Image (cartoon, rainbow over all chains, first blue to last red; front, side, top):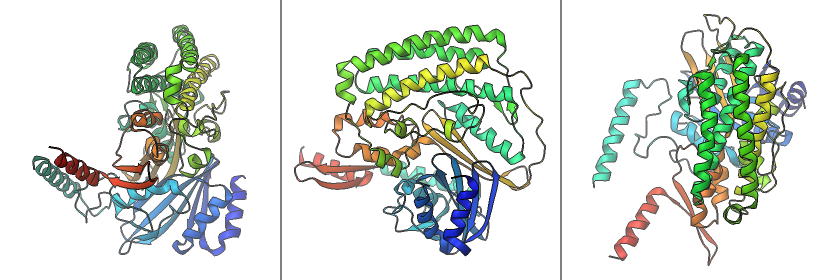
Length: 165
Length: 333
């Protein structure tokens, strides 16, 4: 399938779930969808041949988060599926039941942005140390470098104390 | 900074980064620069794969092979130093092109190096395919079936050694890869041995690609002028690093600072597949299976224990494993 065929198929499947699309260049597609249509969109994409997820990116837009799922079609066309979720209640259903390869990417986003993936088998820290404070998410824009530096120092001190014991 | 993400595939990261920013700015590197990018990327692949092959030999206790390989790897390191002035961080890429030329006077010396490497790699393929020790340690070890490899989103040689023909250079061509002929090497073995052979044959492909690029390099500029202001925009850039698909996502907001920059390196993508490969393996095979994905480490803190008598599986995290060991030590004073 070419870019335009993929888009028309996706439009047929998701109908008003799609807000906007953009094809900035060959083999690159951006699709904005409504958050309610998200899980359905993932299933449809997998049926269409988007079996490979490259990664998941989250962006802090101050009032909300934008979550971008980068999929590859037969290793070639990179489709970025994206939607916004409110910052007060950042919860998304997991996609690991549909695409098992997403397991670490969801953990990474959970670590850095505090977004909960409902139904993920085990959202333990992937990148952050185990004694990192629960309520500090390094890539949220409200945390300054000083906040993070303080947490890193504290986590280091705790670690040394545990090791000494 | 992009160059410092990795000390082995530093060029893959700068290529990916410069491509992302060029996409943001709406510019394109000139043809000669694209060819130079391919040459450096393929030299880097040879150096990375031979480094890996040495490590794999070491993991199965074959240190003689390890030392021979690393001696030969010096040839490609010298070639990189000859071209760029550096062994590891080549600093060849810049936004809009490359920083240094590869003039035609350099070609004979590079080709001599390639001839030597080709001879050696062919010899190693012969040795590896006929040596019984290597076969015993790698054939049917760390199995990853094609279905699992696709499902767990494995990338690079790990995926290709499970028989899946997938390569960013062919599927989503960047730099000059759409103009240079090459084969995507795959193997149906699905085990560590297949991963060794795929990487060896990829090195031979790389040698041919460099030769072709040297012979067909177009004349012209090395870089284009870059606009000073970056408009709000976004770009997804992909590169086939030695370990597999590398992806960078960049978003600009009209200021001099990025709104978001995200990097996903290939090792992370192969960890779920690695967990699958390790299930039910012998403890003694863990090092070579682990080395089989050519890991460039982040963190792995889980372990699946299978009781062979009952077939019961149990997953332990690092802390419970530590507790278990403490308890065992307590029991035997």
